[in-house]
Image 1 (cartoon, rainbow, N blue to C red):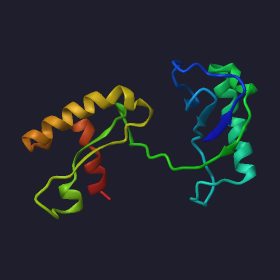
Image 2 (cartoon, rainbow, N blue to C red):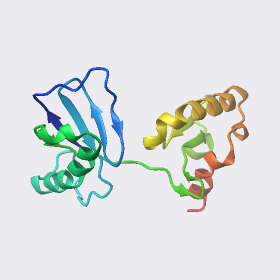
Image 3 (cartoon, rainbow, N blue to C red):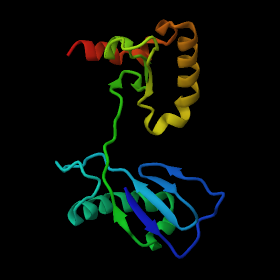
Image 4 (cartoon, helix red, strand yellow):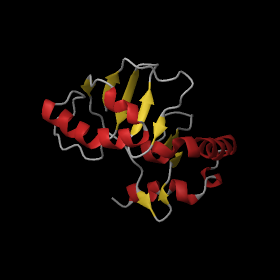
Length: 160
């Protein structure tokens, strides 16, 4: 992720942009741009070397400029690293991970623990569906209310 401030203003009603590079505008003069898929650092600290930052910018700036040309006039401030957790790729694509966690973590209380995760960039598309399916399962205390495509991650974990 790289942060840019700018002299020109980005409209307050203008949206963030999701494309080959995402642009998350944080006010009229600040934007975060991301992300790269391959971070070859063994350092899990969010700070990155100048070389890693330069490499990320070389990858991200052309992608960001393709959807928002004005970004090429903005000033680069810093780069930060993070870990992107992605659900496994299935025949149906990368689907959210839903389900009850009690059998995974062991029953430690009378409460059930549920997972809604792996939404990724399509989270805006899936969050309503994932919430509705999980809510039905929670209310009925029945994980089978969730289609198996969203709970198949449990079988992958069990096979390891």
